[in-house]
Length: 508
Image 1 (cartoon, rainbow, N blue to C red):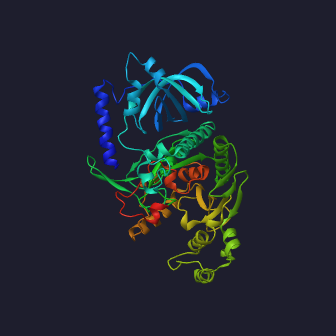
Image 2: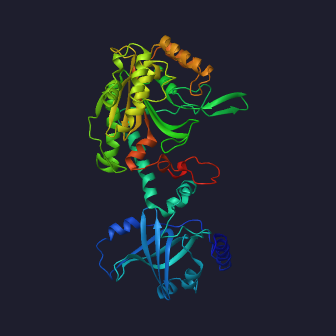
Image 3: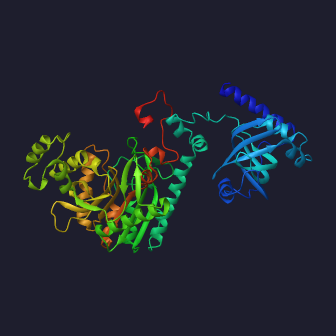
């Protein structure tokens, strides 16, 4: 049967249920137990034994087997599955006052996908299957569309993301991913709150995008008659709070960047940003280790994890190494030895660093070499420290290394997961850097932004020394739940409105 025919047949069943005085879309059901709870509590129940304990459970029918006067349904709730043992005689006796043909209606009017509530006792069948030995049932929701074939499941990757609700129904491991995601984010908040950080929400709509190099989404407020941006970072407003006297603040929330989509990028994603007064990027490294190792241990129960068949050891302390040292380690290029940009470009070309023609400084060239030749090799947790000032407009100058800033990025399994600075607090230097960025914007750089005058005003009132930290939550979830694509770590990723054919991106 086609899906249209199945839907039409089920709509007929809806009408039959109504004619029988049954509501195919019930209002409520009192649950006393869940499947996993029963499986655990009665794990030692012997075959053939019954427990005189009344239970009431509810869930979705995942499979049906009817053999004359007996039926066996597989019921799935949020916690797992359990068998329903349905005996015609028992059901007819217990439901005689409600429906004289209760078993017949159960057989003829239910389908896989329906949501049902049952009451009964616990019994392990002679074949060893723990079951709810049903006394009575109620159809709670009649499903009109069929579930994917049980042998093949929902295997179309693009359809899994587009119809996540079906993906969650038929793939319990997907539900586990999002359950763990919730546990991880709750653990992060708990870790910070226990250390006297407070979470303060900052605006999503902003008059000037800032805090990162990224192309923003643009919107318009009709009443105020002004163009606004969806935030690309929470940084500049959280720093305003530090100026205002808070010493430990954070926000865990969504940011938006009008950029490409890939296995590592979604236009809206979740970040954690943390700012603490009177500390620097060294303190932020310790905080980063503490956050990630604590939630990994609490949620996974181990610091030895596997990501896409790669073993990753989260045991601290993690390696700390400068960008210069790593580039020299993987390419042989010593950027500290170059006296001119041309000399650095020639050496980089010989090392097969590509696309360097537009690099306007040795610092930018160093970063290109790092991104092309080093990043993918950083499988174990690695703090890459001391970045060029040209690519770090909000970081404080390094106290002993001219041309560099006190910044680190954390790399794991070949991708950046966290970013941190000793925050720039000099309003004059900050203005110079933001004006340089504004000049790039005026020249056509879509990822550069204008000068946030209010932020500069805040700095002129005085911001204490501070360390700042940003963690890409989706990438952290990917690592801790072994998701190959960021789309597997986000419940409802952004997709094209219509897919005319499978692309490599959609298969990723």
